[in-house]
Length: 188
Length: 137
Image (cartoon, rainbow over all chains, first blue to last red; front, top):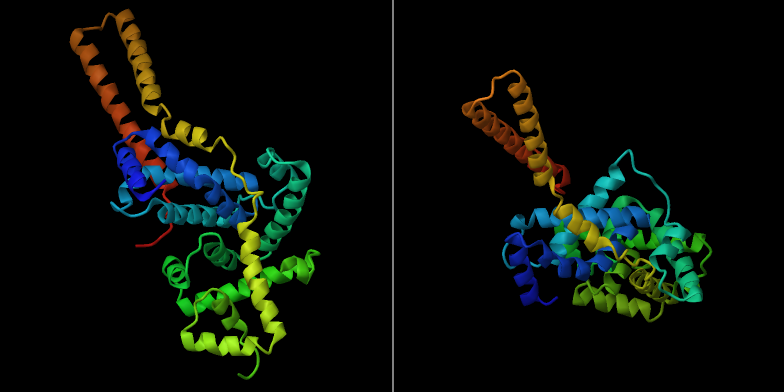
């Protein structure tokens, strides 16, 4: 979805044409799901969060300024939704299950899937060991590709603190990966 | 450089250091294998997270989102309103109190009530799903 096409789709969505939202959802859903899974550590809950964020974004399209890109704005809504879920006392917790990963990746070969499931499981479990703040900054950097100034603007913390927290998050994730049986060579 | 540049290594790997600090860290990396390996780990952690293809989104997302966006709340309310109006009209008919004015009056009253419920429901749904509701102004 290029800029001109996105602008056209958003304009039709604002006019109440729900079907114009479909290409935007399909374009952003995989990336969104990866972010939500990394933040929440639960594939089912991540799917719910992505769905909620798409619905909330559609209903709030009036708040997105004309010409502003949909992706970063939508991902802010998604992160806020994930943060709310993490704070919720009713939240079910736990790492991504093998069963959930198997269901989600059913179109892949068995051995490739098993290998990816193992790595994914280790990464998600390593991420789950981080604090929410560290996890969020790591996701913003590694999965959203934001620079330090953009992360600082989105989180309201100084860029210097972003650098420090990001480094600590990476070191904590490295430790978590090593603790879960990966060797230094496998991490690299 | 005295000691290891620890926190600067992340910023270096991300290309976020000033030219001067970049040169300083690069000079350190040339003779410190420990820090060079740390930079390799920092870069590979990002690569591993990006390569996590197990996180494939369920294909039914659009269908679920579309269903929620087009939920026929309005039609449900109209159907409920018509049922209530017919029930009231039947009761009034048995009591021999039905007049054209009475039928029109109750229809308008039920219509206004439904409109109020619909607006209140939309406001509540918007508030409930607003990602900014916890942010203090």
